[in-house]
Image 1 (tube, rainbow, N blue to C red):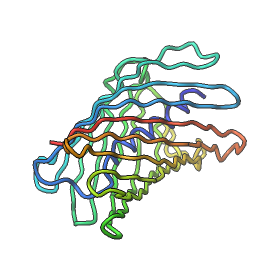
Image 2: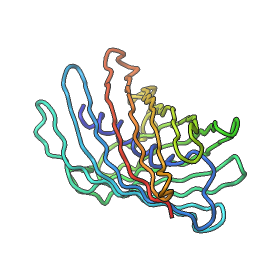
Image 3: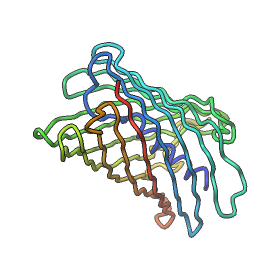
Length: 261
C-alpha cells in the first residue's frame, strides 16, 4: 500500500513539473531556475506517513516558442508508522519540453528517467507524460491555464505498466501586477489500468481517481525583479473505485525560490 501512495504523490510531482507553467512559453532566450522544498504527509486507515524532498529545476526557451526543462529531486527522509524501509537519496531526473503551437496552445512531453537511488525507485521504470495545454487571459489581471495528457510507464522490473489520463486547470489572479499573484487550481488523474504480459487490463485498478486541489501565492521582489518566492498547499485524495472505503488522503506543502534570467 505504501508504494501506491508513493505512486500517487509521484504523479502529483510529475504533473507539477510538467505543468511548471500552464501558460504560453516564455520569450526566446529567457529562462528560470527554481530551488525548493516539498513536504508530504499521508494518511491511510489511521496510519501516517511523511516525506521531505528538496529539488532544483531549470527551464529555458532555447528557440522561439520552444522550451526545455530539467528537474533533480532529492528525498531527505521518509517516515511511516510500522514502515521500516528507508527511502532517501537522489530521485529520478525529470526532463520536460514544450512547444507553443499557437498563442493559446502548447504541446508538451515529460519524462522521468530511472537514474535515482534504488531505495527511491527500486522498479527501474521510465515514466512519460504527453499532451496539450490551453491558456487564455480573461482580462489584464486574470489568466486561465489548463492541460490534458496521458501518463504512462514502462514495466521496468514490474509485471505491469500503468497508464493514466491526467488533467490540470489553474486560475492566476494578479493582485499587484508583476509583483503579487495568487492562484488556485487542481490536478486530476484517472487510472486507466495496466499493460501486463497478457495485454491491457482495465480491471487492474482501472477507474481509480486522484484529485488534488491546490492554492498558492507568488511574490516578486520590487527592487529585485529577477527573484520571486512561491508557496503553495495541496490537499489530495486517491480513491480506489473498486473499494470506495479505501481512500488515501495526503497533503503536499511546497516552498520555492525562483530566479529569472
